[in-house]
Length: 338
Image 1 (cartoon, one colour):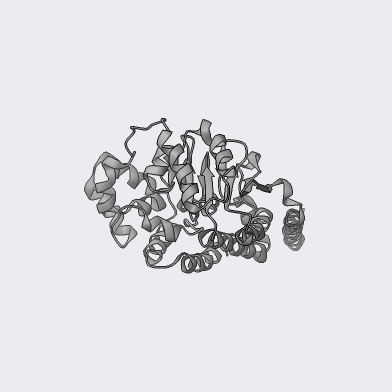
Image 2: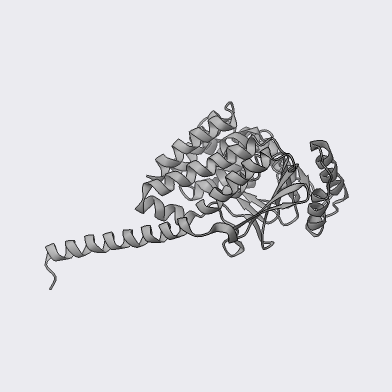
């Protein structure tokens, strides 16, 4: 028989031991060479970033962020680098988001690591948004969360028929961060509010139709597009735009397909224009259409706190600069983590 005092001690000891194991794991991962996780190359006129964790759907970790940021700043200042290209390895994902498992473990075990991750991730997002060189993100495959943050703030975003975009954070007790409060309310009508609150997934050409991608290219031509961009001689922003537009114009897949949400945009604009989550829910109930009731079902599965934070985040972000939004989101991230 174990005495209560001994049991209490054992529980505390096991908790302490587990925390130490997590911290050791995080320290090791912090000091691992990230050269294999993100590839940074100068090719022709371009700096090329390849997110190289295909087994983890190219999820971002702190090591990767710490390698990308200084190289991005170096290429921005380098007179021989005329554009920056970012892509994902493996064909299945561009970047599925931040490495949530490591972040959540960090949040439980060591507050500073989680603080560092969000702060440095958002600093990278801001650097992309203010980059003085044309920035081309090839968002082929899964593009969610942190993957949106390292693509959508750049000048050019190229989707393919295999692109899958979503900001699903309200389902995990968070909010659509990485500058979501900046770009989402700037999409057509109330589309961004709808995407943020429901986590609705957009696929293929719909990513372009929504205004998230600037161009659409058939995936089989993506390699050729990259080579043509790299082969440009001292290109201007207009030269790069011309190459992207030429590929976009020649793309055939789903060429005549209408936007998946086109027929629902009036409902989205009316139902999601409310200033409170409660009113949005009431609007959907009153609408009563099968589309509205389906969204109601989805929203009812989300974190109520996340829904309220997200709506306020987008309303506030609609009139802020990207940098102001990222500062706001950093403060929100720390309040949600701890």
